[in-house]
View 1 (cartoon, rainbow, N blue to C red):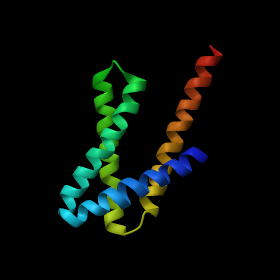
View 2: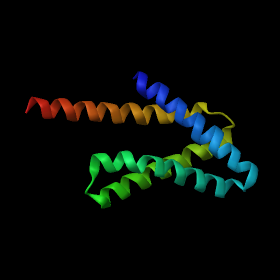
View 3: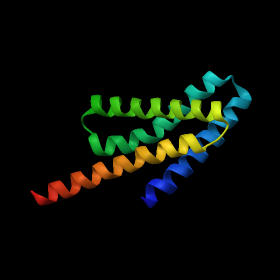
View 4: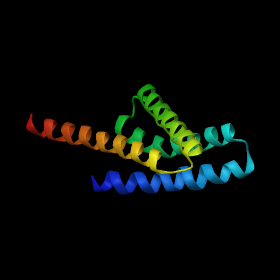
Length: 111
Protein backbone atom coordinates (compact mmCIF):
# COMPACT_ATOMS: atom_id res chain seq x y z
CA UNK A 1 0.00 0.00 0.00
CA UNK A 2 2.89 2.33 0.75
CA UNK A 3 4.19 1.94 -2.79
CA UNK A 4 0.76 2.65 -4.25
CA UNK A 5 0.31 5.70 -2.04
CA UNK A 6 3.69 7.34 -2.68
CA UNK A 7 4.22 6.21 -6.27
CA UNK A 8 0.82 7.44 -7.44
CA UNK A 9 1.33 10.80 -5.71
CA UNK A 10 4.76 11.29 -7.29
CA UNK A 11 3.49 10.33 -10.75
CA UNK A 12 0.52 12.65 -10.49
CA UNK A 13 2.73 15.46 -9.27
CA UNK A 14 5.13 14.97 -12.17
CA UNK A 15 2.82 14.01 -15.06
CA UNK A 16 -0.26 16.08 -14.27
CA UNK A 17 0.95 19.03 -12.23
CA UNK A 18 4.32 19.56 -13.92
CA UNK A 19 4.16 18.10 -17.45
CA UNK A 20 0.49 18.73 -18.23
CA UNK A 21 0.47 21.99 -16.27
CA UNK A 22 3.48 23.35 -18.17
CA UNK A 23 2.16 22.17 -21.54
CA UNK A 24 -1.07 24.13 -20.94
CA UNK A 25 1.09 27.26 -20.87
CA UNK A 26 2.23 26.60 -24.44
CA UNK A 27 -0.62 24.77 -26.19
CA UNK A 28 -4.41 24.54 -25.81
CA UNK A 29 -5.84 22.08 -23.28
CA UNK A 30 -6.69 19.20 -25.64
CA UNK A 31 -3.20 18.99 -27.19
CA UNK A 32 -1.73 19.29 -23.68
CA UNK A 33 -3.89 16.36 -22.54
CA UNK A 34 -2.90 14.27 -25.57
CA UNK A 35 0.82 15.04 -25.43
CA UNK A 36 1.17 14.54 -21.67
CA UNK A 37 -0.86 11.32 -21.83
CA UNK A 38 1.24 9.96 -24.69
CA UNK A 39 4.38 10.72 -22.69
CA UNK A 40 2.85 9.08 -19.59
CA UNK A 41 1.99 6.04 -21.71
CA UNK A 42 5.47 5.79 -23.25
CA UNK A 43 6.94 5.87 -19.77
CA UNK A 44 4.90 2.76 -18.94
CA UNK A 45 5.45 0.83 -22.22
CA UNK A 46 8.78 -0.43 -20.92
CA UNK A 47 7.23 -1.80 -17.73
CA UNK A 48 4.29 -3.37 -19.56
CA UNK A 49 6.70 -4.83 -22.12
CA UNK A 50 8.79 -6.46 -19.40
CA UNK A 51 5.80 -8.37 -18.07
CA UNK A 52 3.94 -9.19 -21.27
CA UNK A 53 6.53 -9.38 -24.10
CA UNK A 54 6.60 -11.00 -26.62
CA UNK A 55 2.80 -10.62 -26.74
CA UNK A 56 3.02 -7.21 -28.46
CA UNK A 57 -0.72 -6.92 -29.22
CA UNK A 58 -1.36 -7.21 -25.46
CA UNK A 59 1.48 -4.78 -24.67
CA UNK A 60 -0.04 -2.31 -27.13
CA UNK A 61 -3.55 -2.70 -25.71
CA UNK A 62 -2.43 -2.32 -22.10
CA UNK A 63 -0.22 0.66 -22.98
CA UNK A 64 -3.13 2.36 -24.72
CA UNK A 65 -5.15 1.78 -21.55
CA UNK A 66 -2.45 3.57 -19.57
CA UNK A 67 -2.59 6.45 -22.07
CA UNK A 68 -6.37 6.72 -21.74
CA UNK A 69 -6.02 6.69 -17.96
CA UNK A 70 -3.46 9.49 -18.19
CA UNK A 71 -5.83 11.52 -20.36
CA UNK A 72 -8.69 11.02 -17.90
CA UNK A 73 -6.49 12.09 -15.00
CA UNK A 74 -5.24 15.15 -16.90
CA UNK A 75 -8.84 16.11 -17.68
CA UNK A 76 -9.88 15.63 -14.05
CA UNK A 77 -6.94 17.76 -12.94
CA UNK A 78 -7.81 20.42 -15.52
CA UNK A 79 -11.48 20.52 -14.49
CA UNK A 80 -10.92 20.44 -10.73
CA UNK A 81 -7.66 22.36 -10.43
CA UNK A 82 -6.61 19.81 -7.83
CA UNK A 83 -4.45 16.69 -7.83
CA UNK A 84 -6.63 14.98 -5.22
CA UNK A 85 -9.06 13.36 -7.69
CA UNK A 86 -6.42 12.09 -10.12
CA UNK A 87 -4.19 10.99 -7.25
CA UNK A 88 -6.93 9.05 -5.45
CA UNK A 89 -7.99 7.37 -8.69
CA UNK A 90 -4.37 6.54 -9.55
CA UNK A 91 -3.82 5.21 -6.03
CA UNK A 92 -6.81 2.87 -6.38
CA UNK A 93 -5.61 1.59 -9.77
CA UNK A 94 -2.09 0.98 -8.41
CA UNK A 95 -3.46 -0.78 -5.32
CA UNK A 96 -5.62 -3.09 -7.43
CA UNK A 97 -2.68 -3.88 -9.72
CA UNK A 98 -0.55 -4.70 -6.67
CA UNK A 99 -3.28 -6.99 -5.31
CA UNK A 100 -3.55 -8.77 -8.65
CA UNK A 101 0.23 -9.18 -8.79
CA UNK A 102 0.28 -10.47 -5.21
CA UNK A 103 -2.46 -12.96 -6.00
CA UNK A 104 -0.66 -14.13 -9.15
CA UNK A 105 2.66 -14.61 -7.36
CA UNK A 106 1.23 -16.54 -4.43
CA UNK A 107 -1.20 -18.54 -6.52
CA UNK A 108 1.70 -19.64 -8.76
CA UNK A 109 3.85 -20.39 -5.73
CA UNK A 110 1.13 -22.62 -4.28
CA UNK A 111 0.97 -24.76 -7.43
